[in-house]
Image 1: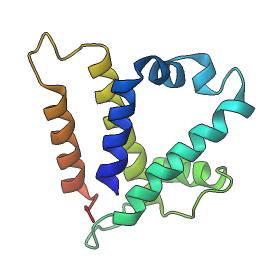
Image 2: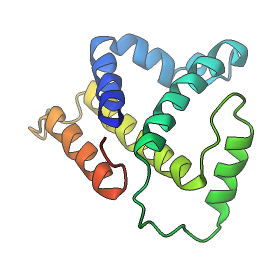
Image 3: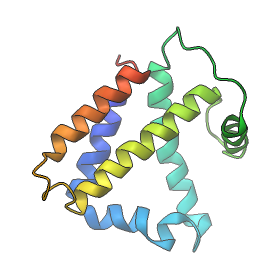
Image 4: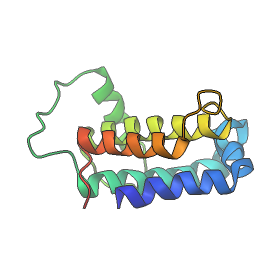
Length: 140
């Protein structure tokens, strides 16, 4: 499920870069302009991503991190997400970190950042997914 979700995300961005940019790089997409119209779909997208993370979950041998400021922020964010599943802070943290890493890679790919480096973005994306899996996202 995790690989399906993140591969769909990249495929959508590459197929519709103008929509990707509209969603993620404009005041409209950020929710600042019309939060009632933009935040609910973004919330549904994040729920799908977090559920994919939760379905495979962090490894059983993961020691929960000490309660810190980030964990408190994640808990506050989770409490303010109406309709979302109850997820532990470790899943939320892994989900947000995974999303930012994959989103950043896709954004850089769309802007052509890897061309001058002569790097294949598909290979970078695959390597990032493999790295995330090694960090705790276990494939089904």
